[in-house]
Image (cartoon, rainbow, N blue to C red; front, side, top):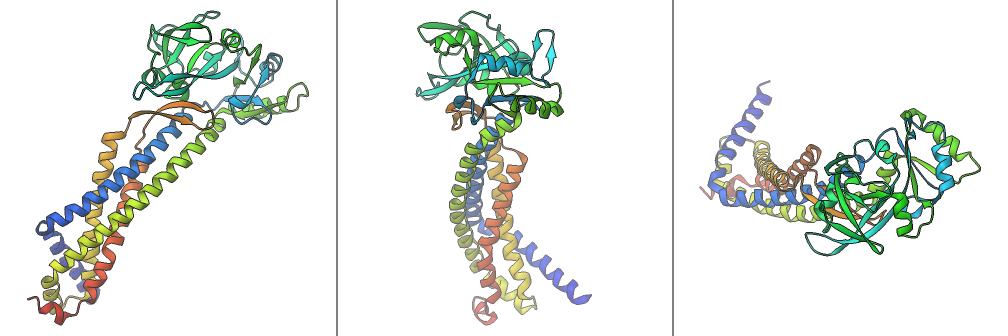
Length: 399
């Protein structure tokens, strides 16, 4: 047991001495740590954008809700349903029912151009025509300012996120829809879901404004339970009177988030990878400098009987300590600067803007720190090998 204990003791002593001498190399050490912090901050920041978008769509769905589209359609924009089809859907088994009948809302989805407050550039903003049951289907809708729109009138209520992002959507303002001005009479929230990026009005009023006749694009329904989905779907897909596609609401929104989430995540890893290569080279230079500065120390340790293994481990350990410090600093910077940051981007599936918040989650922070440690390991590997292979006679010349 003496030999392993002696080797571990050497590792401990060399690491402790290495860390104690970091202040003597403070400038180069800080350079490496700051470089890695920048990489982690950018990587976590970009990924937090994708995560925030995904969470917004995930929070839009209720487990007991379903959406019905025309068969072959993947989005509301591609779908079209007649009023007769909408009535048949509302009568299908499995739908929850209340005092006012079936909890099913036939809806019209269009986009209008409005300028962004931040840039002044035009953006596609969703304008949704709903039926009274919409507020029972999406039971997390809450009007927080003003009042709900009146059925049969050219009035709108606006999602809180849309009101923050786009001009002309403040309470008391009005927007041009067709030949008329439609006043904004209320602001609503939807527990952070995608509805907060939309403008809502009466579908029966919106249809003639866009010359849609008596047609809709989707029916949103609240089921009596999540288990009732199969009964609801089978009844509609086997009904020869309709040609529809039935989806769980959470599956529908998950599919909508896939394209943009994958795009942003892929871009984030490409940027992080390129920056990580630069940070790794910076760490290599720093640790080579460290090894050069510790030449006398290494020579002394080798003469005293210390093996090369503890020296290698001490160099790698110092490199990873600097990387850990940089990773924690970069993660903290990303969290403080970006978590909860409001933004809006184009949903490539619906071709409309979605307002969301950046989400710097614990998982992203762990991934950022792990990436930093990998950079530190790669950055310290070659200098550590050099330190291990340094001939004692050569090192002694530095004494």
